[in-house]
Amino acid sequence: MRTLAIAVALAIVAAPSVSANPANDWRLSPTAAARLDQSKLTEMERAVAAGTYPKTTSVAIVLNGELAYEHYAGEGAPDKPNDTRSAMKSLTALAVGIAIAEKKISSVDAPAFAYLKHMAPFANDSPLKQRITIADFLTMSSALDCDDNDENSPGNEENMYPKQAWTRFVVDLPTKAGWQRDASGRGPWAYCTVGTFLLGQILQSATGEPVDKFIESRLLDPLGAGPRNWDRSPTGEVMTGGGLELTTRDLAKLGWMVTDNGRWRGKQIVPRHWIASALTVHRNSSFEPLTYGYQYWHRPYTTACGPLEVWFMSGNGGNNVISIPSRKAAIVITRTAYNTRGMHQQTAELVEKYALAALPCR
Image 1 (cartoon, rainbow, N blue to C red):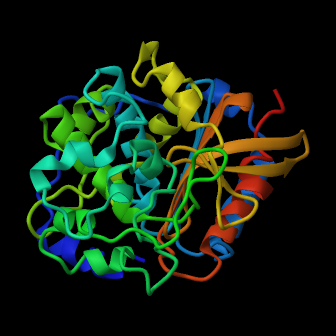
Image 2 (cartoon, one colour):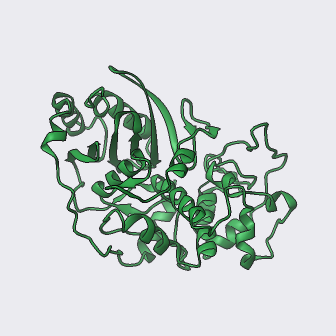
Image 3 (cartoon, rainbow, N blue to C red):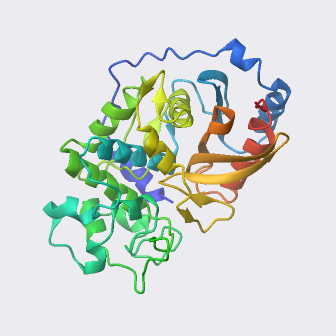
């Protein structure tokens, strides 16, 4: 997916934004590294070099807030931002939690289109559209007729990228015929990038700030994140449904911050209760055994230490940013195997066979 979007983004993306503190002072910790099974990591490096996991560009592991391991391959490099595609959807969800804490958005149950009145009137408007909530977009269960896994869906993301004004395209989408909530209060799950993009526009309207600046000031700057490149529509709308480019270490910071209940170096960046809500299964997905929280994926793994539950950001190409609270760890896998069969399964195997196997049991 997003094949057309790449061409658009390369043509019109603005110059990289740089944080006020671009210096990355996070260094590898020999103490943390000593706790990893180095033999598993050596095996992994050989497998990556042999092409078992094509186009892997980096692997990083964090233990107890310390950078324990990093490895770069192919075109990967410590200072090179990675296009992790939809993995950055999770960043949008974290920003929504911050906006709610700041009382810019009333709650997850707030009607989403109430924050988009400046776009009215909407085509295909209906009571059902007006009842779509923030939570519906967060959980990929809204009534909008959008499904990226169905090429005939009106809201398939590929239909948005050729448009000049993406927000106009999304707010005018029809709703799904026969859509209804189940006993949990949620609708059927369908992967919908345009819904996450619209969350960014809702953030912008609710906060009165450009959404990229809001996310940078609340999330990326406090982490000391360096260069970051945003995709934009032809009319300059910030793409919050994926495509933000960050270095591997900055992705690792995000992964660890979520593992540590929203904290970074003792400072609460994202409210603890929001992290708990985001890392709660709200929907089954179409891809067993994966389930879904607030723009976060959840899956079980099998390890020598026993069954393990992880939460992760995931994107086209086989990209993962994994948070593992039970092990006080985070793992980053970046790959550029875009739109290739088996990319996600390959990453899952790499994670289970090597990265998780290298972690201490406690």
